[in-house]
Amino acid sequence: MLDAVVLILLWLTVVLRTPSLLRGPVHRVVWLVFLGLALAKTIVFAPVTRLINEVSGRPDLITLIHHLLGVVAAVAVLRFVALVTDMDAVRPRAPQRVKVSGLVVSVVLTLLFFLSDQGIEVDLDALLSAPRMSVPTVLYWLVLEVYLGAALALATLLFWRIANKSTAKLLRIGLRIIALGTLLNTGYALVKITFILIHAAGEELPLRSAAGVLDLVLALVAALIVVGGALPASALVWRIVRAHRTVGALSPLWRLMRSLFPDVVLPYRQDRRRALVDHGEIRLLLYRRIIEIRDGILQLGAFVPAGAAEEALRFVRDAGVDETDESALAEACRIELGVRRMRAGSPPRSGRDELVAGGANIEEESEWLSRVSQAVAHSPLPARFAQWWEREHLRPTAVSG
Image 1: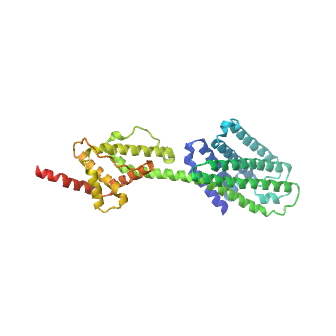
Image 2: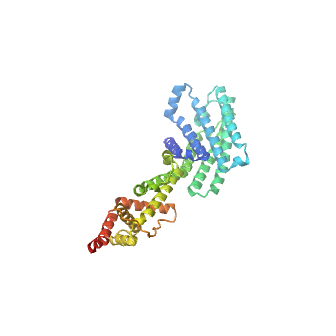
Image 3: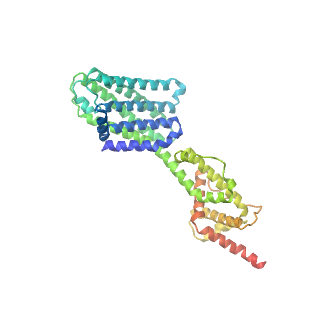
C-alpha cells in the first residue's frame, strides 16, 4: 500500500513539475531526478515487474534497470546541487566528472551483472536469504552502494547548506525535508553494504528481519523526497493558477477597453501555450492587461463629467453595499457613465478626474481591477447609476432649454 502511495506521489510530482522545464537547467535537472525516481519505483511495482519479466525472459533484468535509473537520479541530484551552488564556476570540470563517473559506474554495473551467474536480486530480504554470493555479485553491490552512498552524503550536506541560505520559506522547508530523505538513504546504503559484506563472508545475519524495516525506510526516503520537492512546485503551480484566474477576472474590463480604444493593446506576440505553464509568461500577460486597462480608463476619463466620481461613490454608499466593495463599484459606475456618453457622441472634456489608486503593488492592483471588472460585467449598480445621472443632469437641462 505504501509503495503504491509513494508511486502515485512521485508521478504527481513529475506532472506538477513539468511546467518548470521551461524555466532553465536547474528546474530541468530537478524534474529529471523525480522522473528517474518515478521510473525506478514503477518498474519494481509488481504488475509492471511481471510484464517486463514476461517480455524480457530474465527476471533479474529489472534489477539492473532499476539500479541504472538510480545512477541517473544520483547524477541529476549532483548536477542540481552544482547548478544551485554555482560550483561549476569554481570547478569547471565538475559537470564532466559527474557525468563520466555516472557513465563508468553504469558500464561497470552492466558488466558485473552479466558476469554474475547467480542473478542479482533487487529485494534485500531475498538477497540475504540467497546462498553465498559470487565475487561479481558482491562487487556489483559494493560498486552500486558505495557510489550512491557517496553521492547521497554529498547531496545531504549541500541540500542543507542551500536550505539555510534560501529566503523562500517553502523552498527552505522543502530542501530540508529532501536533505532528511537523502540522509536516511545514505544510512540505508551503509547498512546494506555492511549486510552484504557479512553475508559474503558466510556469516549468519541474526537481523535478517531488518530487511523489511530497511525496505520501509527506503519507502519513507522516497516519500520525504517527494514531499520536499512538491512543496516549492505546488507553490509555483498555485501562483500560475492564481495568475490565470486573475487574467480571467480582468477579461470583461479588458475587452471593454479594447473595443473602445483599440490602440491601448500593446503590440506583443505571446506564446499562449507557454503562458499556460510558465509563471513568467502569464505574469507578463497580467502586467500587459493591467497597463492596457489603465490606459483605456485614462482615455475614457475624458468622457466622464466632472464630479461624477464623487457622485458615484455616494450613490454606491446609498445603495448599502459592503464597505470593501464601495471603491470598485464606484469606479465601475464611473466607467459605465463614461462609456455611455462616449457612445452617445458626447465631446471629450479638457479636465479629467484623478484616477482612483487601485493598489500599492501588482497584486493589490490586479485584485482591485478584478473587482472593478466583475462589477462592470455583473453588477446592476453601474447601469442604475448611469440612468440616475442622466435623469438628474440631462433632463432638467433639456426642459429648461
